[in-house]
Image 1 (cartoon, helix red, strand yellow):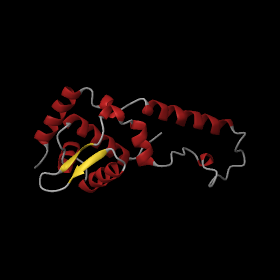
Image 2 (cartoon, helix red, strand yellow):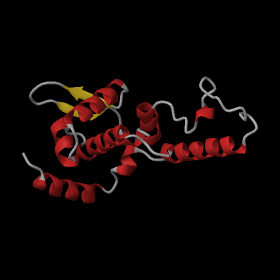
Image 3 (cartoon, one colour):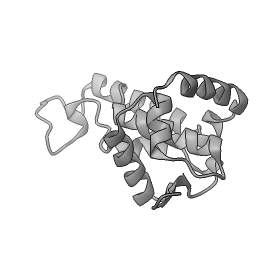
Length: 150
């Protein structure tokens, strides 16, 4: 399976929020550290805020932080939020399916099983897990920030 770049942006944003917790993180930090486009991160922060994963604070000293403990935010839930429909092949969606083999095709069942296994693994991973090697991640972030243009 291939996830969108947008999902990657949201997960990196949440990971940085977990690393900086309880401090606020600024969108510009995410942009600078990960060399991403600001509109993408603004959109990610907005959607994560609407989804109840981030709390945002406007203004000069503003930023965002996790809205709940990192160990309560499952990567699988974020993937579902950002990816929406995870239909790997058209026959997963009865409304758009054109395959006459639906219901008897073993390939379709294999794809469904694989998609479930993929999400089961992501449901077992939390934002706390992807931020658990905190000192290594912060060292790498410090190096990235030192190289980033201001």
